[in-house]
Length: 265
Length: 256
Image (cartoon, rainbow over all chains, first blue to last red; front, side, top):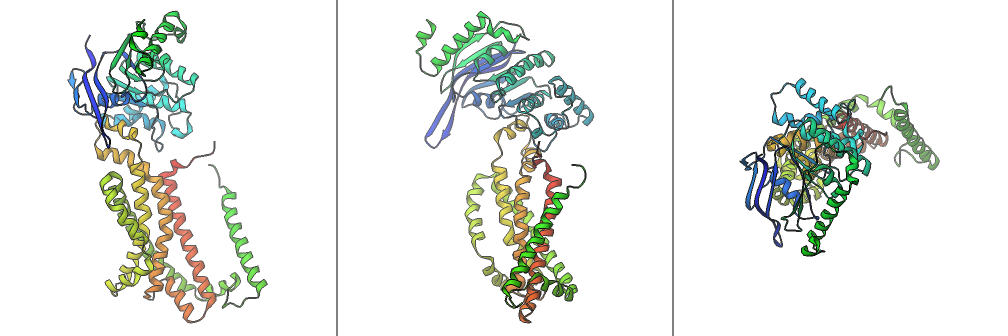
């Protein structure tokens, strides 16, 4: 299986008034096609920088980012993004919001076809009947559903999720986790999820990468060998509890609170 | 959304009637003659007597104000775009604009009148423009520079051009701020037009009618001009409100 996302020895620093601020240090990461990778780590470890590098919105000082066997040198049309803030355009209806990426990626596609595609996705995420509403008329969870539709409407190879469930209440979040599995089944994609929620990473991902504190580097990789979709109660299995405990310890190490040796003992 | 909301129409009219009643009662109570303070009941005869002059001069004032305002919209938006999209231009232009705005326009009127001597229409439009473009430039600049990076990233990650991002996201997102500024600019432009009509009189517009009232010691006429100006201001303001409803109605939160 080929690696759809391959990050090789990426090092990056931001230029600040106080001199360069290194955020990523020799980061390596690879996600095979169709897999779901979650990246966890302490705040400020460069997770969001990582998403911008993969999206081609910025370029590393050192190292390479490969997508689909091609070196990323500019933004690509085959990437979808969703953020913690759903950033829906308030002046557009939900349907027109979902269509937005198609207007950029496939300007020649007939309008009816674009709308049909958006309607199909909206009904898949349970937003049927809300197509003509404005974002301000929807709840936070519904907006995030619409935002997810927009991120996959153009059938991207790579879906970049930067804490999309972070601002939702616990039950809505679990609903959306289940929805992610459902979307994976219907619309296959390779995903990279940035999150602070270890349960979320274990429930959703095939592979959890723990990044060290700043400057971020790959500290630990945990493989979750379970098929998708998964029942939500898998989180309460002995195996999951063990995974969560392992990840928790790794986070402590990343935060610099526990020496690495102790964590492995 | 269905039918007319009578409360919305009746309430402001009632407020105006109460205001006029208090004004009338106060003048009557104090026993002021018209040369101290005219009462609303003195104004109507003045209006009626000079009705054609009022119509003619209102139009003179209105069209110059609108042309000045139109210039403000164009130049203000352009300046705002330059400042909003370039950090450097923002730093460079801000002090200049603030300084320019701080100069009382009453002092500019004689200068403009000397610079373009006899060009009354041009002078009036120019002052109306100078006094009103600042809020538009500032609000467009702020609207553009405070655009959350995620909005840009969603389109940029798909390879959209700067122009597409501006057209599809930045511009519509700035519209509510733009209209907010336009409401301020409307009244400012009126002040600009009247300043010229009174400080550098050219015999046209409501300002000149005010002046003739002053020269003829016709105090009710002077007050009537003030009321006419207020009415014109309200008229233009509500035109802006209607435009705002059409182009930025989405920004209005409906009670749910």
